[in-house]
Image 1 (tube, rainbow, N blue to C red):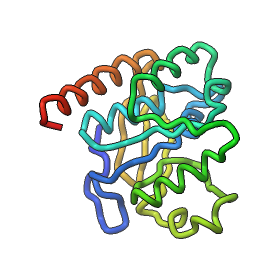
Image 2: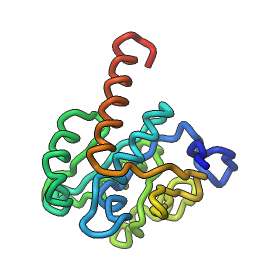
Image 3: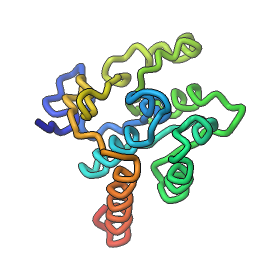
Image 4: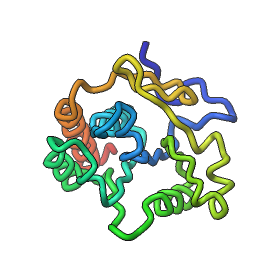
Length: 179
């Protein structure tokens, strides 16, 4: 059964219109090692399908840590999507992600506990309406706090095809004034 993200929201769960920052390299590991782009791209595609805002945050090390056959795909994703932030080398990506989320009032999807940043971002990190996690089980991406249960793309390439279509549609909507 596929649920819309954040369906049945209560005061303790995020709203459907909440901006979602996805700790992309972190969620890429939800299917194991090496990490795969199919998880973060599946999540982003789902959000775009529902016209809900989301941004993927990657560490500068992402192209070196992803599966070797996904390097070109990662480069294409970075170049063609306004929904991707790659934090420069030498800059703590977790800090940037947390700073941006705090400034924008965004939610964060990650399994990271952000222990190195707890002192500075305690209020955000401890807020269950803004920090949540999920997993992949039986080829489905699940984020329980949001009642999210969606099929995982079979491959990173399949996720990319779907995502490209949605990015183009979003661009067309902006061009014609409907987005």
